[in-house]
Figure: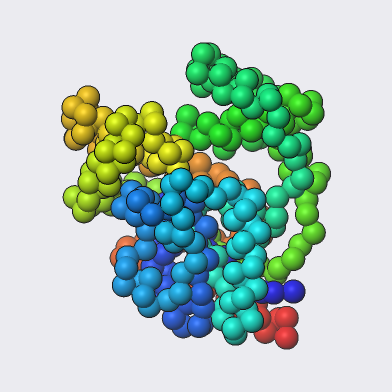
Length: 314
């Protein structure tokens, strides 16, 4: 069974930098499990690793596809497993890094068998437009409060899929996950990174403003040049934090400062949901860090834990 290292945590915590340092020390290859970083054209808004980092350590799935060819969690799980096996065969340590909890789960644990897509999905999409998010969310929350905690207005696909399975089977989506778990195929050491809440909030604020200063508006402008309105953005952009708000800036519907404030707030809420997801995995070992030196300190600790993890196996 292949041993893999998994580094998770909320957006802006410092996962990418930490993973680079670990990969250098251990001789690793990084498998990105950030579902927005998969796409060319979303580099700035997704916080994709800097070019120099990509050149220093092999990365898989960063800028791997176009917005016209989306990658589902199931596809990522299948292809990512192949990438991990190939890296291990080269004598490299596979390091899975990301904040997209469902994609991490799809790769490391596999996805539980679910009812296939049905005509109910189209009906639910129509209901979402007609009745609004809150009405459908209330239905899901009543039937499956466990999964509803992971759903928000920015993740309508999750809402629709969970209700589709609920209506088709009469069983909560979360129950399907618990009772239909696939067989383990790898041996993961999962490390979670976290910072004090106030510090993470400040980092999110600074990073959001830096991303806007470094070309995020231009990135959104390119999308608008193709679709003319944010409602027609490809799902990966339309559902990501910030893109629709910045489109409103470029179409003179909202000021840049107002949009920035809203993006910061939405990103903080997103980080909170990520932590809720990752905290549910009780096997994750959490590291708390503060300040700019946190990635270096984390990396050193992770390297030690990995070597201990491997020595136990040996």
